[in-house]
Image (tube, rainbow, N blue to C red; front, side, top):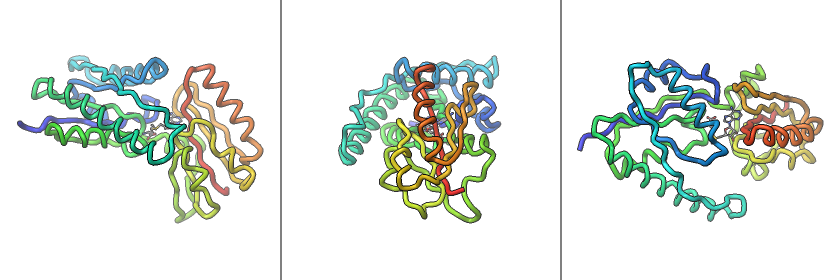
Amino acid sequence: MSARRVQIIGIGAGSPDHVTQQAISALGEVDVFLVADKGASKDELVALRRAICERFIPADHDYDFVTVPDPQRGADATRGTAAYEQGVADWHAARADAYARIIDGLPPQTVVGFLVWGDPAFYDSTIRIVDAVALRTPLDVRVVPGISAFQALAAAHGVVLHDVGQPVHITTGRRLLAEWRPDLGTVVVMLDGGLACREIVSVAPDLVIRWGAYVGMPQQQLRSGRLADVIEELVTLRAALRNEHGWVMDVYTLSTT
Ligand SMILES: C[S@@+](CC[C@H](N)C(=O)[O-])C[C@H]1O[C@@H](n2cnc3c(N)ncnc32)[C@H](O)[C@@H]1O
């Protein structure tokens, strides 16, 4: 069996203006996009992906969207680290099985595409899942980078993320409290369901937070300031935005200047 072409395409963090020429070329090759069905709350994000395809794929190129039901995943918040990691591993295996079944059912020349929010290299499982699918059926995989949310955030605030020659630490809200220390350099926090930085205000009130929600999208909100001064406003604003739009995606940096 010859290997089937798969394009994993980073589409940027929500603005069609983030889509690169490399992504546009790859989009034009794809016959079938596989999309995980994450339920109604993410409908707007699926619609955005469709809008990107409609805008950038030539009208004479036919393509389909195939929705793949997402396997059930238990509640992460109540699990310890080992149970969480095992839960994620089981979920990835179930997803890989589902994708392999669908891919095997497609005609051999069909090019399969995955649209990845932001950049596929940051907090996205697609490359890992496709690697797992490739153990089940032969694939020829290409990855197209995209603009990540934290790059869009830095640009929106007009800043360099780190001091000269200094590091950047990219982490999740889940890990922030365990990892943060004063010499870490700038910390980028993604996937934070509830502004975990609130818990370090008492030890590091003078940190500067640069925050953004829906960065690059029409409803974009940006705030920055001394952590202790702005955190309560951010907590209130984040809850209000979530209420208004039904979902919220935000990202922030913590730094000393
Ligand atoms: C599953 S991760 C995907 C990250 C993506 N691969 C990237 O490179 O941006 C989702 C997280 O990315 C961040 N994010 C993605 N798009 C965003 C946006 N437009 N505005 C703010 N945060 C965003 C949020 O922290 C969100 O919780």
